[in-house]
Length: 190
Image (cartoon, rainbow, N blue to C red; front, side, top):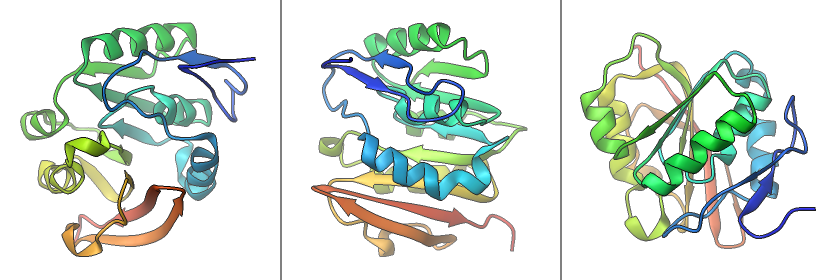
């Protein structure tokens, strides 16, 4: 049994493990139903993937990815309390392949360089912050994406395809209640 500020990992090596998260402004874990749909979409590519979670919050998407065979996950969050809990959960699950960083997502994308591009990226900012499209632009400009990367977007409004970078192709879109979400394929090579 789990309660408020807790969630259960759905599948993989950590299936049924419960993690907790702090109460924090804008922290809204992706629901079990949406996570199940998302990981059905990602099933062909998640094993061995290098994942980036720009607004990790509860860590649900990254820990689910690692549970299902992702090679690595980088979890970013601006809140110190959230980052402390993410590190605790990473240790609890013995996720040595998780890297947790306290930072602003767009600033990190602009300032960092990687030799190991990301195959899967989760972009689920606090709804009230209105950062979704800005982060998509920063992500594209960062040159941190592998060719044919999958980018997951979650938003409180229908995702406006015209505000996304031109190299992004819509793969799947859905809504559940007041949450709109989609998976996009990013081509970085001409």
